[in-house]
Length: 330
Image 1 (cartoon, rainbow, N blue to C red):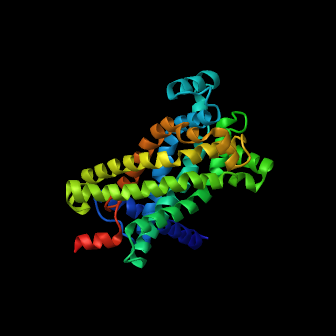
Image 2: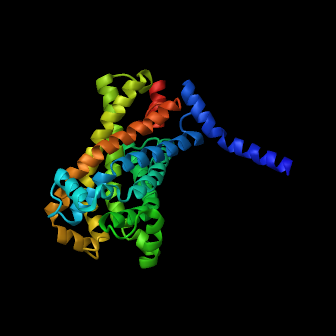
Image 3: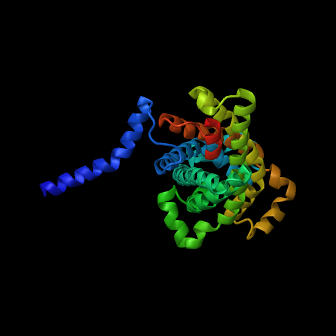
């Protein structure tokens, strides 16, 4: 028993070595790993999970308001009055409905999204040597988002029901069994296609805009390699590029976001019926101000936290293909 217990303790220590190494080397300013290695993609997954989960949790009140504005635009007409109405009628706790779905759902999605994107971008840079970099960004971001949304969809299904039906459930713990009981496994993926329709355009535009903005700033404005810039400069570039990318992605994904909420609310049986009910102009304008107010800071903070984690691990911030970095070094 003594030997077995000792071995188990050694195994636990070995399993925690990577996290200890990451923390210590980051604090000491050392480099946890080389770029584009398996450990590097692990850092990307961890960074994406932490940054996405925490930032989406922080804006839960705005997300609750956005969903209610989409399903009841007559009652909730603006951000200040909408928040005041929710607070007055349902209490301050109503603004945090669905917080667990935001934290865990978008945390898992963020880990897969950033991790897979970084991996596919690296592979694409090696495989498609003579290919236009835009195609690599497009392919990497679209595949990463398709897979990441499969993990998000069950959390999103519960979250939206909790936010628009106060008596449905308190959170994930009791929401998951209720959805399964009432609608079966299909209930978790009822909004997957609309989710793809919203998130695919958003993230393709977001990642591509981010990459090009970063490249533009370093090559035309700062006119220095990223590695030659200070940490503060690198994170400043990240924030500026992220806000630009978030604004562009929000505008292009707004129609699908309205359709998805309408389907979950069961105001329509199909996407086409939802589009007809909402109206073409409203697809692009309804809840757009609140989504810009919500997603602009979120995307900026998300990229900032994500790249801050990279910096703590001794790695440069995001942006660029491996082949571009090799050319810059040579």
